[in-house]
Image (cartoon, rainbow, N blue to C red; front, side):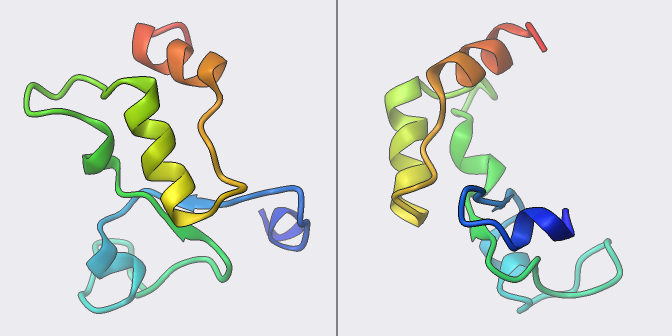
Length: 85
């Protein structure tokens, strides 16, 4: 993980709520904040009211809104939404 933070080829995504990513509220993980340089795409924004994954286009919008270099791969998204992982 440390090596990944130093590479411009990687984007590290923090899927916690924004209040935890920003270190505004205590979390169950023992320390506030995030990995330096990570972007925040809360997991809750990637599921609908029925707890099903949102469509790929909606997920890509959520990822690219945080960082243009951080877009969901359709292959990875399909694998994660179909349980292929």
